[in-house]
Length: 327
Image (cartoon, rainbow, N blue to C red; front, side, top):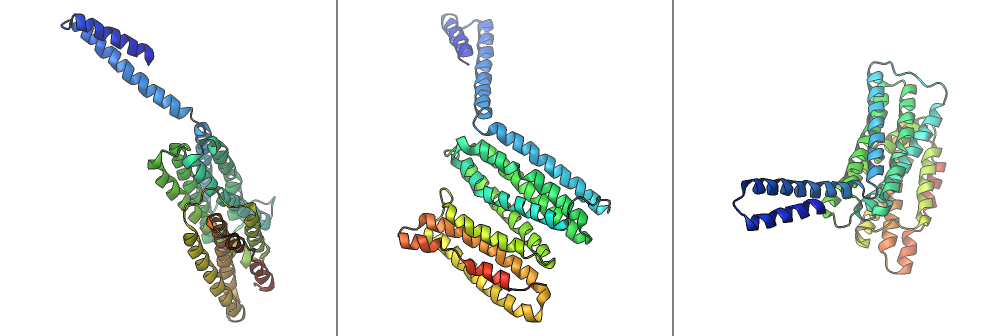
């Protein structure tokens, strides 16, 4: 860029001495184009070599491969030719899939935060996120192959694909943001992608929890609640975006929802026990959201007493699950 600029200035000096020389004007135009192209090339090089860009590209390629794999499995399921996995139990596949989805859910906010203002951590976080999609897809295809209900097969595969596609959107937005706090035009897209990922995680967790409850496997839901409780002791997520009042309002909403669902479970355990699975799944999802909002509330609470109450563990949810018999 500097060389071409120097040639441009030398040519311009020649034109000052002889402004009516057509060949010199042509040379000037050539140097001008070279300067423009070299500036564009330099900008592209700076963007491509920025921290986290290479990792974003690798992660995007990995998740695109996962989406192609799940598409092939969906086509096989439609044609009823999806090969059944006989080397592992359905329970183990459900646990693997649940674990992968939960880990992905835990990484959504860290990736979103680094994409908006922590360039040095962006590469590590996106790589960590993409790493869970291979086991996610393998487990979802394996679980679908063991399900006899065609609709359940397609639900698992479709929701896994939706989660992968939302993660792909997140990675594209993160790559564009680059961890640059001044790139405000990218922040809305990052936040939108993060919200879509959270919704996809919630949807597939509801499906998995319902499947687990139908099979009498309540332990997975208890573990999910216990894990959410454990994360209360890990500190608060970085850079909460809302105020204490915002998080307090959401916590109250989640708490009321849990209370209503718990009461309904007590009633259904006598009248319609077959509906307990879906209700138990809803409690699990609501409690996970409650715990997450509690951490954010603690980060924005001023008095120490209020902070400690926001992080108070709620063991009663776990006890309620252990004492409520599901069919």
